[in-house]
Length: 74
Image (cartoon, rainbow, N blue to C red; front, side, top):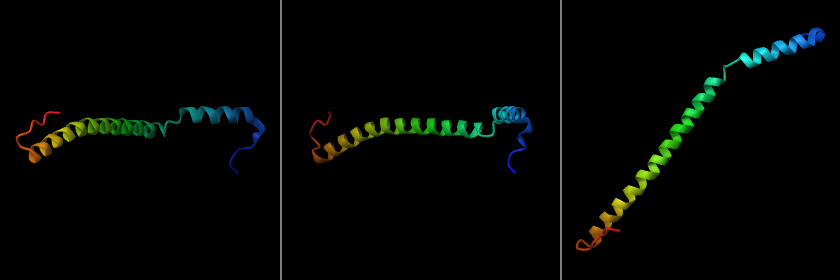
């Protein structure tokens, strides 16, 4: 039997709700999930910013390889 007899149903519900509110067993998991999401977001933004600059450098290098005397400043 999952629930005690409901002769004193109000007290049982109050006790259940009080214990439910005080239980913090899942709080740490949520905090870690938010932290992982923040780290992932920072990593994605950082890679996107660095990727743009790296792409520009490779474009300049390929331009210089294709035509060494050309001005490759875009």
